[in-house]
Length: 216
Ligand SMILES: [Zn+2]
Image (tube, rainbow, N blue to C red; front, side):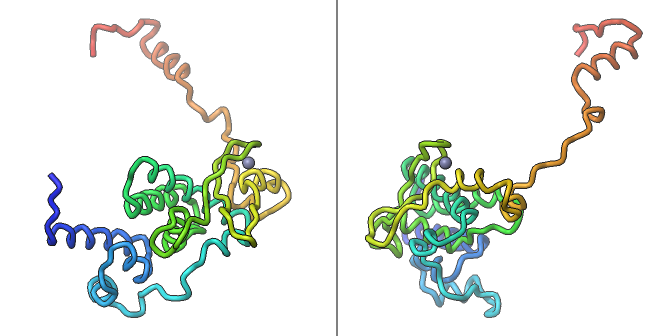
């Protein structure tokens, strides 16, 4: 049973803060998500002042529309998952953490989207936390059927189209795109052991006897 005393809520906020710290969040981001005071967060989680993530926080509506196609694809992978979880009634902070972990699981190299960026994207998808209104939604590409982020409203904003189609178009010509989606080397077919090979070996070893089915 989920209880809701002050101690329970505080404990859940601390657990959430810990999860955010492990994903590289800034104090400001954790403050928005947990409503814990910055001083307390710094004291509990950032004992080394040098280790506190700093710098200007990202502003996603501006960023997304000028980012290169690889970043827009990465943002879409995160954002589409986040929106699905939200539609499934997941609370926003849980949806954010789960979608970000899902995104990290798909990254081979250094992730293009930081946790703070993911927080900013989620804010603007839902119109919550730091965003007053929604400035992204999820669209389905009529050509490749991929879901991707797209702009909502705003006079200066125009959609850049589907990042996944652009990646497919550029793959042959752009070494950056190729490095992001390396094709695994072809395996020597002689090295692949098929079920039929194992069966043939067993058959030879047994000198033609068919293994008994009565023994386990
Ligand atoms: Zn497409």
